[in-house]
Image 1 (cartoon, rainbow, N blue to C red):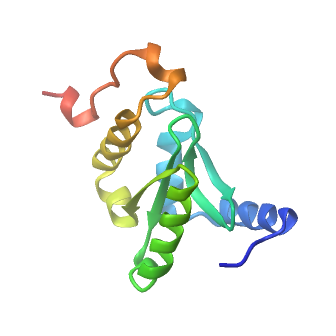
Image 2 (image 1 turned 30 degrees about the horizontal axis):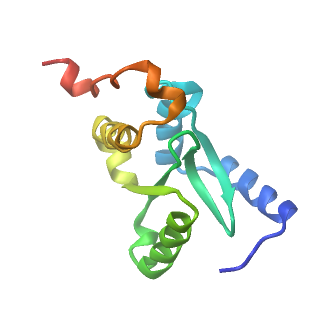
Length: 137
């Protein structure tokens, strides 16, 4: 784990935004501008020595979008998750193929994680809306 200085980390975060995967782009379209239950998300956020894919500060929730490259990086991901948990963040991981093929399920999982620890700024909003597939019933 290499600590980055501010300039290097900012440059890396900008590069990751420019070179986002298709799955990250699609998920961002659903999270940006408070589109998911009015929670504010940021993308490619520097937290200590790591850059989180998506972060909701109100809920202290990090959402990581993992591709096949993460299969061999189990130890690195575990260290990263442990570091973030030690800083008070909760981490959920979703697979690229789930984002691409089952977006409703991914959004439902994120909503579930967001609602498991209500934040003060969202306490007055009442219950979270149902996932898309639940609304159709």
